Length: 270
Length: 286
Image: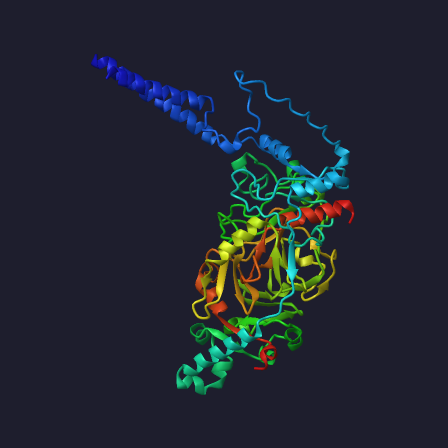
């Protein structure tokens, strides 16, 4: 009787092992690439050359989900208020710092990192910035105040947009682009997704600006909005996974939190 | 006890059978649209006949006569991650970024890519299916990245193969300006060409032949102007030039706001449908 039971248990274990082996083998078998390619061809859409069929195809594919670009100007009141707020905060700092005008106008990287805010600085005080480039921009031209960036940065200005760019060192490059024009509309699901996203931004510790970060094979992006405009800072690193400027949040958030307004005339002068 | 043993053995056998029959739990989303008819149910109403499919020559085709086709936005290659379904055409009037025919598909999960084995696509990048339609979206494809639009991290642009596989053909395939704009930040970047437009779009072109670009830093360019040749330029963590596959990685930044009240976010959006639209215009000769 006992022997019989043992045989059954042994048999059951053997069958279980075979079953497990079969399942594992199935999992290891890679998909058939020809079948994948055939499935892609099967579900792919083609576009009729002309006529009603083409229009129907476009409608079925929601090809009318078009976005629109709206021209917008910056909120200059908010810009002036932020400059004033930073100025007041600077005045509250130690008398030693206040007595040194250059520290306010051109603070060190360390000072800037502990002093977030927005300070105005005329382009003539920025070593590699051509004044004509910032003067043609009708949006706030913001550049990071950190010394290692400020002294190397170039500005490419147009009326509604700008980019500022600097190679920080052999391992890392930075750029910041901005525009007040905004794109609206498009896919309703994406609009809803974007609204949900906007409800939960992270905020810069010093200025309180809403921001979002993305990392990629090349480095890191930080997008933030100020004065009704959008800005994106990109840092490209030789080794994005190991270089703390790309791998960690502190460096790029520090840059975003402490900025120089390179076209002070926009706010009514430096 | 004996009946328990029988039950156990029956259970194990049923498992074995299921496995042998490839008996995965069917995914409801994979269920065929048409189910076989139930012989006990009354005859279904007669269905209208399927219209004759249009002949191939009625569809848009490229200069080689290949009919253009594309898989829906957000529908990525199996095992390459969840996509981002965004049918928005962000810029309806851009020019397609390559002069010749082009093929959007994965550089990583297809032939020649480091993860091609996952789909059994092992072999070189010049496999003919890499250079054929249909196009497939690669925005949000799984990579070691975090992108706010991607449900699982992911690729922040799309990858575009040129008309021919360059190692075999030796051909030059040009990337062009998608809009009028300005080349910015070129002096500071090793493998990226950025094109910024006056009304706020920012495009990034990666992996061109950077030592032979057709444009200079700060230059104003016009729509369709040649920027450089599609190549495989990339760099490793030691700063040495290394090769990727021959393709153009293309990104589109937009300062997007869901409505007038919400602050905009200037970031990468999925350019796939914008490129489908641009390619359609190209094939139509518009």
